[in-house]
Image (cartoon, rainbow, N blue to C red; front, side):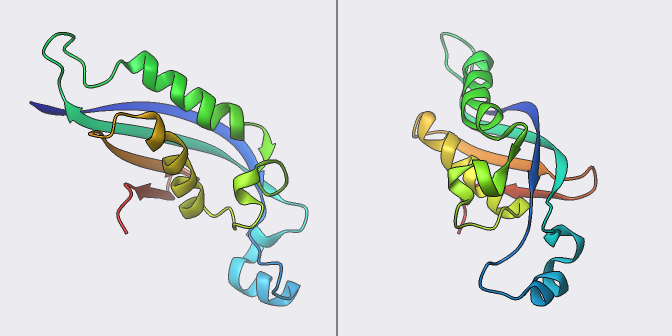
Length: 137
């Protein structure tokens, strides 16, 4: 039997959407207020879902405590109350859009899971704006 186990988490972080090689004017045209040179913040909501076979002995797909610890170590400790552009190495040369943040989170969590598990990340930047990423290209 296959099931999906999900865990919600959240973190608060600041970012600025911009491309260094573009002029300030072009950045404003493309990214609007999100290109504010003084940054802006979000209260991100995260849903991490792991799909796999239910273990016959434990009844688990994955121990939710294990998933909780992975999310804390890989996402909350790394991103919470940080300026993503300045303090998070993954965004040194990567624009911290919601799409890119979701991909980075996926790439941080996936190696910590058993290979047979499928992973899906849903990242809410606002209650109405969110991104879903499951490793598909």
